[in-house]
Length: 434
Image 1 (cartoon, rainbow, N blue to C red):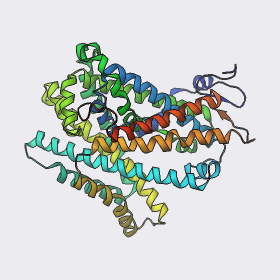
Image 2 (image 1 turned 180 degrees about the horizontal axis):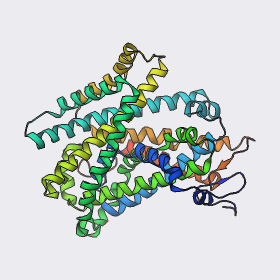
Image 3 (image 1 turned 180 degrees about the vertical axis):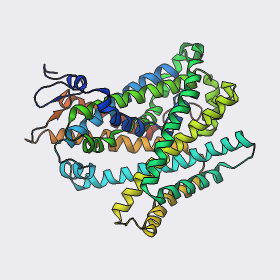
Image 4 (image 1 turned 135 degrees about the horizontal axis):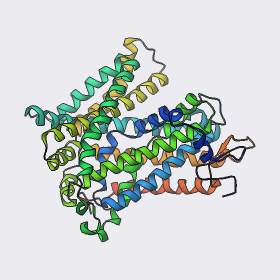
């Protein structure tokens, strides 16, 4: 690292990123920070306690730190590349121009797969959560399969209405999710038992081996790199503000996940998570078990509310992204009939998958992590390495030269390999195969 480079990068005049952070006031980057945080935080976090229960609390923090470092630098790589192009350019332009059309085709396939597999995960998790909530609220038994179908159809109708409808609804839901998170998960975290969190009391010598299978799930939960082109479009070619949004937003995500894991591990024993994992680890079962540990009807209802809002906001965000992608791909207009056709292409495959296999929430999040390892941790480092060979002057460069790019590339290969080995039952997964 030379004298002009500090962690997270420098501009073309040698001005450090930390100076950039000092210049910007919190208000100037608040909106972008919330975009980064809102993109990452959602239903995926509901999988973290179950998939992390084998490695328990200490190794979970270490895994979070590694994944945060990885995805923050992926985002900064994309920022460096984005600043070489006109404002408004996005991944289709970057990948085609730097790596060629074949890589762009692969990236398009991976992004489409991530959209669909996440929609399926949220239908599965939504069905489980809705079924549990109805049972908990009015005592009526409602199968997760049927609840998942109703959940999907109702939210598909919202997306079909208009983008503005989705935008307004998501804004309200995010406020509700934040309030319910603070009141329920925050309360549980404050009442957490240190003896539950203590790794030594929970078989520390046997925990490290479970880290590898959990890696792809953390990658999915830190998936905010897609916000970079939108932030550049919003702030213009101002690397200081965009970088600040990425740093502060990702740190806020880290804190939220830390509180969530503290609440979960501080109130349930490792053995209780074994039972949750062995039954498939769907979101409804996790929430109901944690709610019982809270021993408060109000706390239980607030936790149910948070879980429902997390699933709904994630579903709407991902479905709108896929809906717009399909509409653009097939040149669909914004007429009601064309939006209906786009809705069928968007929602029919994941809804059918949810009916056939309703308990695949955990598995689907893992496969999303596999695809994300390829699209986020392999393609951007390859682009950054190749783009730096050109004579174009970059207005911003990520610290560490190509060494950091090769390190992230290596991590991407490790994350992807871990999911493949886990799927083939060559890695132990706590409560499923050990």
